Length: 457
Image (spheres, rainbow, N blue to C red):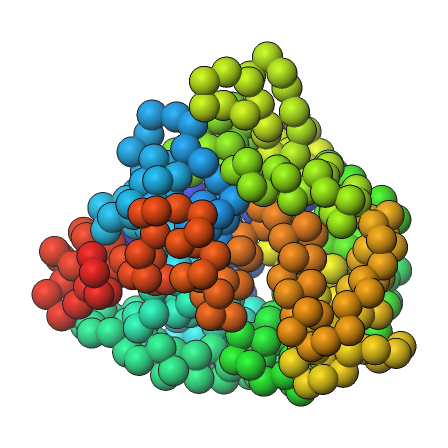
């Protein structure tokens, strides 16, 4: 059964810092089963609901990308986190259920907009096009995460809950084809941003053409379409809308930097520092999981440079199995780093470097090594000197660890590059190839007999 929030959902727009250019209406309570979209004044609250649902995916998506892989070790008492730390993931894991539910909440609201908005009278054509494009993009984003996390998933294209509660799984390839179709359709009508002069918060918080192209660059990388991945990453890099922070530590300690391409923001009332799957609560407050010793060694290496700012050490916490290290990227409501960054400019350099390396473009101003060295220069790390293609590709993998640690990429990277079994079996004796996909939540299997489970669960 695909769950669609059959209860009153309080939807509030993110405060997005102190910026007054971002819309900040009063909280609106919506019944998701009875979303209201009958007149122009209804459009904005439902649009806010769409972004709110999208935000719900962020934390469990980071957990999938980093907790499943070799970045963490268990340090607490919660069963869900022990499963990730010991690599004994089950279909009853709460984070698995949370990600599945947030994916389909987003898809539901997007489908509602796509079904209802065309018939709402007196909505300006510009508004209709933009909100429709945002719905197409965010539905595509949700399906992309779903396909690469769970494999074959239900392809939900309507709000018919009777039909959706008995829907079967569609092939991953079919889901990904729909993702590309949604991205391409969205790209046509999303607003254009031509320079960095527009507020950085708005550029990252709301979907525009450039950050849609960034998501498409990631899509093509995962698809091994190296030409398109390189081309779109170059478009984003060359646009001038986003720029690398001078100091890497700003990526860790600040929200809505000029480097942030897509970022979900929170305010004092819905800060991710609270809740069962909040990153600050898990990584800092309760320390349910801590950076693995292996990751700590990588981030403290000369090759990482200033990327060691991702973690911090406290000798007073070093006892028993606790190595004393903590992730710094996710703060509390009173700190300036409580948001979750989903795409930033550094990833575009890494995408382009990998795509170029795969095409044999290794050296020179338009080579993979040059892209890697842009990030290494920023991090005050030694330049890459690798020469062979295989060595450059391994350098890309390591650079993604240094640069993107705890931003939700590692597990997806290992699986898509075919490196998961080699890396993870060396990391944990409990690793099994079944963990290259998350299980379908057991509750979904029980409620919808048309769903089948992934192998091994």
